[in-house]
Length: 197
Ligand code: PA5
Ligand code: NI
Image 1 (cartoon, protein in one colour):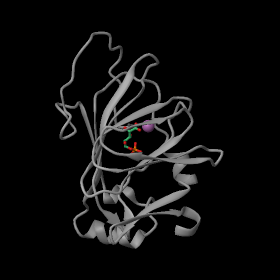
Image 2: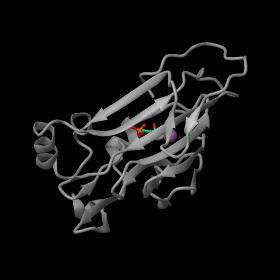
Image 3: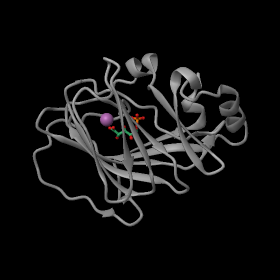
Image 4: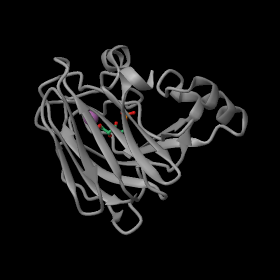
């Protein structure tokens, strides 16, 4: 994430404790919190988002991570936790990004909850993969990715990606993802962004 400092050469082994049942990283070095107010421009219904901000500005997602040097050969890892909820019917989600070094992949191992990984390339090709506990999603190089929580509890994944990958939010913010995920009366719907607005 952009907020993360670079701690220089990391060349001594270490361990980190996780609670895999609850999807918790113990003693993270960095904690990113995205509130409703940090998500302006991402949901279709801007008015519904402002209503949610006025109602208490709930957390949409959090990321818990370690400060690993942003260098080839290193591995970044984190816990990504997206809360359940909707904005004008659209499921809570992450901003989504390409990697700054575009030809770097990522794996997400879902620990808890359910939802979808939306993925797209800059050439317009698109894909989605299901998140369920115990299911791993492989995001190949060049694919932008966004997590969507379509369930009723937090959607939690453990993510691993190359040290140098970085995050590029700007390009996908301009392009948008090809589809949006809505949940109405308990039913999940995928709507082409061209139709959803
Ligand atoms: O690197 C990743 O893909 C994840 O750790 C994400 O950063 C995390 O899920 C939050 O999403 P975003 O970075 O799109 O705000
Ligand atoms: Ni990523």
